[in-house]
Image (cartoon, rainbow, N blue to C red; front, side, top):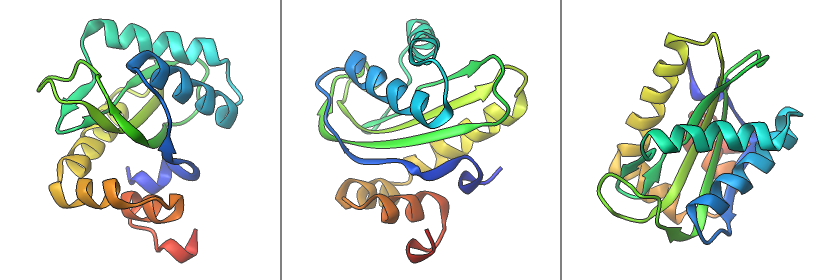
Length: 153
């Protein structure tokens, strides 16, 4: 599964302004709800429930909040670069400034795990993370994450 199949240009936010983990999850839930035409509260509760199991802050300033939703027909990704890093209770204790949200159908199984692994591998690449932190343009960020040409978006 290629990231271009789950991340649309409209789901990239180059300068999200939030002050806390909860606010970040609320903002991401609101944007996802709009793009997916779903209930914002349902998305937020799904993400929050997953966070209670353990932080999805994977280290090096990166978080990958994720969850499964009923009646969803495809994997959905969203990326946000935070204006200021926030405490995300990450495994390494470092603040987070790059967030990739992943939502999957309840029946996704291995596809969900494969997408999570792909996102984690990409964001853990120090060069990719550096470029994402420097970039302020949604199209360029989308191109960097998906491998799509920036002008084709």
